[in-house]
Image: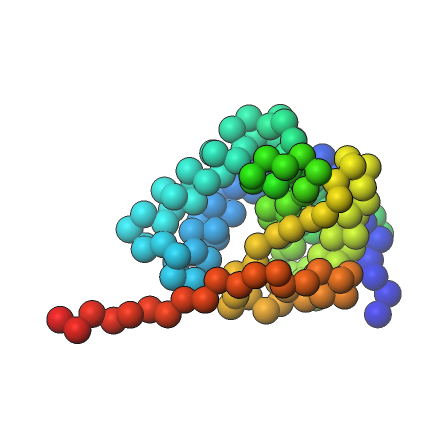
Length: 164
């Protein structure tokens, strides 16, 4: 399969706002499905997470938000957000979000975006990139396997039912 040709285009504030209207509920649902957050406060906690990491939106220092643009079809197929590691280590990058619209998935767009993000990271002087993928999302891990990303740690959980 030939991989698509893409470009990463900087997001505008309006594009980010439109994207977050869908992504915040999606992130809340992922956290509920993974068992990290109860339904009662998942949406609020998801919103707070985005507010904390992107306090100035696309103008937040050290955070880079891009549209993934299919150059052959001349349309945007998704987005990627990359920035400095949450712990503040300037030489370590983190892929906070990589999203491909459902109708464009499994065509190589995510893999191409990862390769473009790696190039961006090199230009910034970063020495590594990390990311988080929910354990039940096997398709989301695939774009990272072939470029050489490895699992360094794993959180393992089990729901404990009440005996009452």
